[in-house]
Amino acid sequence: MIQAFFLSLGQLTDRPIAIVLLKSLLVTVLLFAAAGVGLWFALDWAADIVEPWLGVHDEGNIFASLATLLLFLLAWWLLFRAIAVAVVGLFADEVVAAVEARHYPAAHARARAVPLGQSVAMGLRSAGRLIGVNLLLSPLYLVLLVTGVGTALAFFLVNAWLLGRDLGDMVAARHLPHAELPAWRKQTGPRRFALGAVGTGLFLVPLLNLVAPVLGAAMATHAFHRGRQA
Image (cartoon, rainbow, N blue to C red; front, side, top):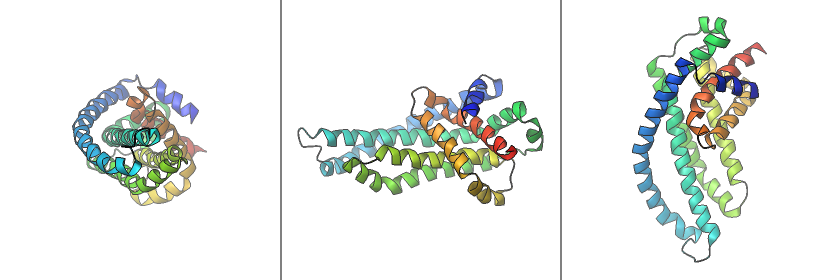
């Protein structure tokens, strides 16, 4: 996975990938700004409910104040991650094709382009899974947060698993019939989780998080083809 990261990083300046990076950044920033306004009001409403339960109004309850701040930051991170991966999904076929053309020309010649409608559907499902799963697990996050046990680790593991699936599907859709995807996912679980862990880590690093979706798609391409060659 380390080699895949550096190969992908070195290809960011290739014209096809650089164009996708600029397009995806522009669309992501615009959508994030629009969605952020709505999220701000939603978080303000949620804070009125969560803060009394955590005891934030207690003077000196620093832990509760930090817990509320962490919840806010996680919500903003989830929003950015959901939008960024959904947007790059629209252009992922261009990234994957560029990586394949340079490193896996035989596979590139056999690949089939993913229709725009399918790319849009995959992006929306990705965002839906991310938000839905994390909302479903939010009570667990809160319990772990209050007890001080492994909140960050649980959050990281869940989102690494989700991202690994999303990135893997972007590549697999070019080479496998839809009916074969579930079996492929079962066979490649550890590899996709490692991919998702690296991608999730990139999303946590300022500046790198801006290129994380494109880097992730490129890394997923290497992971997919090297896994099939193994």
